[in-house]
Amino acid sequence: MANIEKRTNDDGSTSYRVKIRLKGHTPESATFERLTDAREWAKKTEADMKAGRHFGISKRHTLAELLDRYEASKDCRELKSLEQVKIRLKWWRAQHGDSLLSNMTPDVIAKARDALKATPKQRGGGVRSDADVNRTLAALSSACGFAVKELGWLERNPLERVSKGTESKGRVRFLDDAELARFLKACRESSNASLYLAVVLSLTTGGRQSEVMGLRWPQIDLKRRTAMLGDTKNGDARVLPLSGEVIGLLQERAKVRSLTDDRLFPPTAAAKKAEYLDLRQPFAAALKVAEVEDFHWHDLRHTAASYLAMAGTSPLEIAKILGHRTMAMVARYSHLSPDRVIALGDLLAERMGMGVA
Image (cartoon, rainbow, N blue to C red; front, top):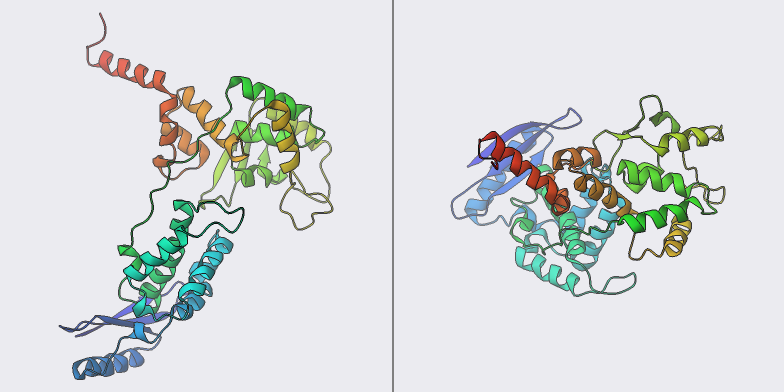
């Protein structure tokens, strides 16, 4: 029996989703702009299914066709990780682009997953991580979800029945007190005038590299000691706190700021297309001078979070400062605040009248 559902699209237009379910047949669905087309398709398809002449819409479209439609859609174009998603979809296109959607079964996708896992990374070689494989599966899942919800080419997302690899809980590398002192000294003495400010901003705000390095002067309010972030990684607006030595450093930098470029860290004239100043070389040089090993720029963010945890800051407060949407991202720092956990236990016992006499 056919069921027609009227839907309102994001752009305000109207479409009609048809679903046909007949006993003994695979459910079929399709979306149309006109109600008359939806009714005609439903009537013909239902008759063909009963007569054994219908082979399913998923058998009339290839994976390449789906990827073309998905990449051209608003859902895909507005992704913050668009370029990475396209690279991952390109892999699926090369492996199974000519395959009919009906043939993209969980078993086929699982075999492709295992083949990808066994393939060395293009850059530098080495074993491909579960996280990398999972992101490639996620890209295909988004396309298949689009086929289900918007196109009606699939009744169900086959990725729902494909298991993913177990990812690590995340790297937690932070500077201990001795490393921090040596590294800050090396940054302060660096020949690059921007390195020390960028590092101190990262350490005291916990901001991501792109957030800190992409700051513009209109975002900074020295009186309120805040830096307003608009377009963050997870899409939420967030405020970075400006405190301590950062205030003086920003005041000094404001005296020599460019009149034609409002970026706090404008790129060099030779890198016109860059979003901000490239500090990779002076950063690496400072690490070498400070004798700090196995440390990346993102670890400055881990350092900020770790010191907050050791100071007894609650996970909820850390999540708010760092801009994490879920507490799972903050859980990695929980082992750094045992004294705080003990203090909370003592407080609970005291409130219940069970404190140490």
